[in-house]
Length: 505
Image 1 (tube, one colour):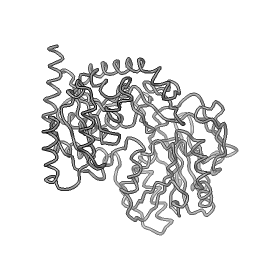
Image 2: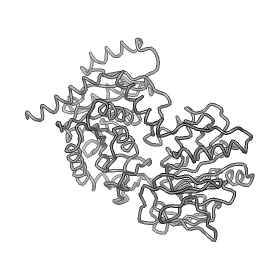
Image 3: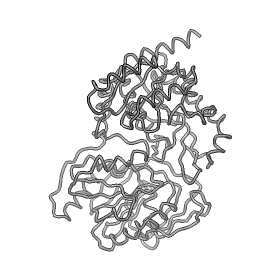
Image 4: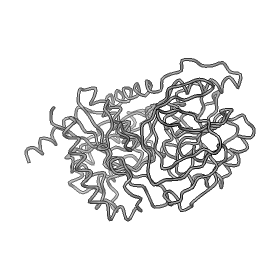
């Protein structure tokens, strides 16, 4: 195998498009014949991905590994930070919970441990891959944090990687943010930046050209590309920062109305992504009771803090509205993971793992009790799901710190090899499961949607699209789009130059 060459993408701010561009380059390098891996030293996200060996990493790195046609490992994201309450997060190290830490304590106490973890993972990846595509976080110009940061320029130095800086023109002020970021960098770090990419452009490129010329003359940095906005990409989002755009992307009126409850600690909301490819599904994310109306399906997604998100449902009036909809009997309810726990009678947290509130009543839609436990379940799962007297082989994954027990009634949803998962009412209008990714199973999703269509007097839609096939096509579509608008050859030249310098030195 040839020498490993790294490249790092950093942004002027969060949501500049780093994750998507890293995904694109993972696929580009694979298309060009290189064994490629993604890397993000430290990720703060509530969307998780389960590796083949049952470990937890940031979802973006799992998706990037899929784009690179490899299995994800924890070396690709050795440190995952999952916020679970005010100023406190669960620190996940190599896929397993390490401890809960407040931000100040993490910064003071974890820095040297983090450095060692990052170096070890980088070394392991360099031994196995020809290209390493590294993602930064936030901005490298956070001057108040840079003395102990673990995710931007310090990682670029450790990897000896050239850096490409990404600016999002959709946010406005892209030249100011790019120039300001460069000027706030130390000279050594600024010299490591080999060029910039302007992302999410809409409009006439000729109108932008004077600004591009000015930028290159003023900074001496090359504009490596201007990437036009690419709609309906069908690739998993990084985190909840993207949620505001979900409804905007899928806001046209369609035959089936699906409401997704967006509580403050929502996690793994990408479970609902398969509905976005369906021709008859209108997706809405709900934060207020008056937004609910009369949906055909209500989905309660995962939560990093089930008790406090339950309290949000009650204080916002959403819980009362959900109860009214259930009594009418025309809406289906589907709870996943934390949402499944919320559908029960009670949630207990005796060790105050997620919340200082030790117990709260659930919505009472299913006869079950949940206790938050100190041990975390992270596993890939498969089994046979029974719905409408049909059986479906389903795959999914579990991430939860809770044990759920049924009370005097057992109508499981899924039969696994050695256990049962989930619960449903006798009329199957309320369903709960720990299976993330349940709607990614095409046959079950088709049966569910056609069952709703039948009740509404609509003809079924058969042979619906495969979500996994569409996502695979999306990786190629994204790679082709970025390759068309970015000087990939120049980036590869700089990667080789940095490697040569390290050999010479």
